[in-house]
Length: 202
Image (cartoon, rainbow, N blue to C red; front, side):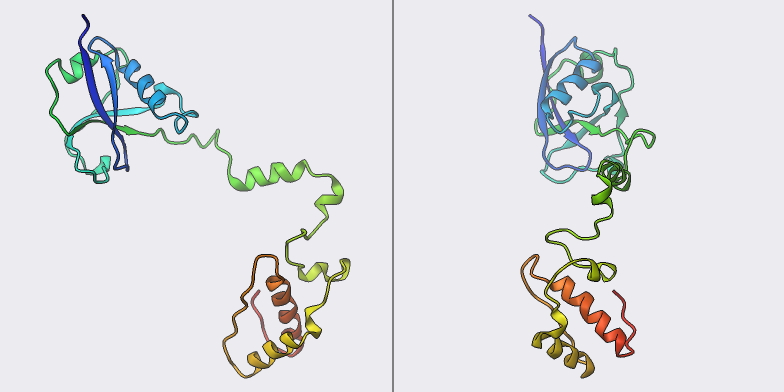
């Protein structure tokens, strides 16, 4: 009967270990596949062979484990090496982490930045929407004031009180629910204050 080996693994920078069980004559490649399966769906995007595994012997104290702080560690580079050759066949120490997993660094040539993703999404918009400078719940910007119909807050008593507070050098805070017009009011206040000779930083 093939001997089973139980290994406790942890991700670099994590504090919670997990268990994988393999046959003693299984390979490091099989260990990587077992780890990938155990970490689904978190590791769905990572090929098993790209995982970096380090053989360690670290007491599991429930604290965060950082690979950089571990002095004695061995990078398992050979996919063909047998589990028994690395970890032996004797029972491993209890409450001990045996493997630290380091996620592969993202390849810059294949990664997509948020700005690039946004640019691609914008490219899919029809021309009429590309020109649109506001959204239903978004603020009305300076350069779009004359292009849309909205209730101008400049004539409200609230705005006049806010302006007076600024003139009196008081601190003003706008509080309200999302899409309640705070940013639009702020933009309008900036326009009014600029007309009074104030220098405003939007």
